Amino acid sequence: MTTIHHFSHQEHPLVLKDEVVCENKPMCYACNKLVITTVQGSAYTCATCKNFFLHKTRAELPTQINHPMHNKHSLTLLPRLLPRITCDVCRHKWEHFLYRCEDCDFDVCLLCTLQEDRAFRHISHDDHFFKLIRREALFSCDACGQEAKDSSYSCNNCDFWMHTSCASSSTTVSMPNFHRHPMQLIFAIPDMHRSSDQFCGKCKKLVRKNYWSYYCQECAYFVHIRCAALPDTM
Image (cartoon, rainbow, N blue to C red; front, side, top):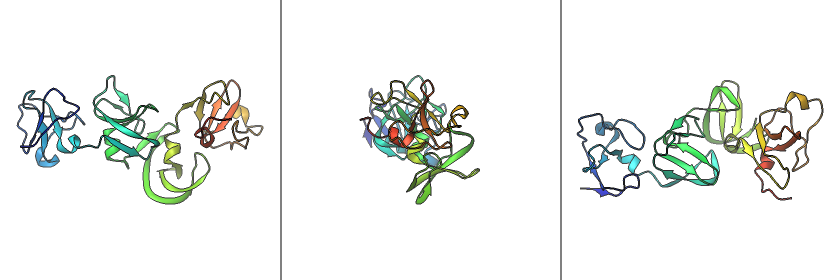
């Protein structure tokens, strides 16, 4: 008999069962999917609580992973968090196991970590879904304008491509060494500033009108998204 101690249920040990018998529909505590051992494989149960179940595959999830939409840091597996968390990949609310970067307040639901090619919506492009293209290929990113041989996210409806790093750009940044106000992520230069050229506050180079940038509306201050990712030093 295989017995484990799992961080999600510290009160009692869990026992591996090849067949789950339950009066009600047994639901996995990690993913909230029905525990059907003939389909999902074996499951762990708590003999004391009678109503705690974990798919074997969920119980054996790695405690830390790397994810293509957050290449700055590794993500740590956490148990249920309340209130519900919004997944930063698919934008759905989630209250079960998730992976999180505490430093960046970046969360990925279990479904998105298990299915990295799952379609998702991005706030810049709400009409269509993006899908991950894992094969490395040389392309020009429609978010930052730079070429790179990398995996990418692609919208098949309108041929929009973006780096995985651009897709995970924060909606707000602060760079106190360069500008006193927080700046918001925008996806094109606002019409009121299109009559003249705008330049990046960090590198002093031109900000293209239809590429993403960070923007302070109060000061009409712009920064390339790539420049914002660099260390905040003068």
